[in-house]
Image 1 (tube, one colour):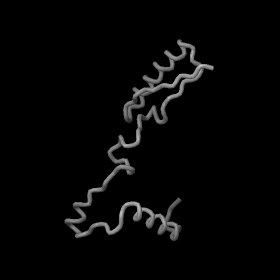
Image 2 (cartoon, helix red, strand yellow):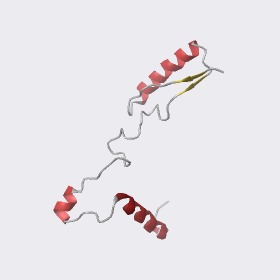
Image 3 (cartoon, one colour):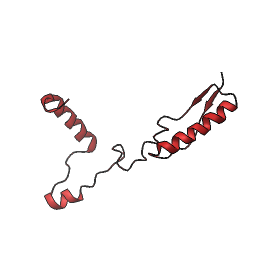
Image 4 (cartoon, helix red, strand yellow):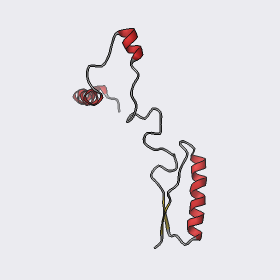
Length: 98
């Protein structure tokens, strides 16, 4: 069995262009005798961790407005606040709609 690893770039959110690119790679690989072509995860959507402006894994919220208008700023870090929020909702499952 001949396997081709397709190390190709993709365009974020441009599924049509990514499908066209994948098609070209598949045709070339088949002509070269490949039995299986493996693409990067999420190749068709073009998504890559850290490439999306609003990716929560890299986002740093701007709290300037809250500080200015409400005099508010966080008193716990992101991870601790997230953990506390999850724990609170686990104690109050009736507030979660399914």
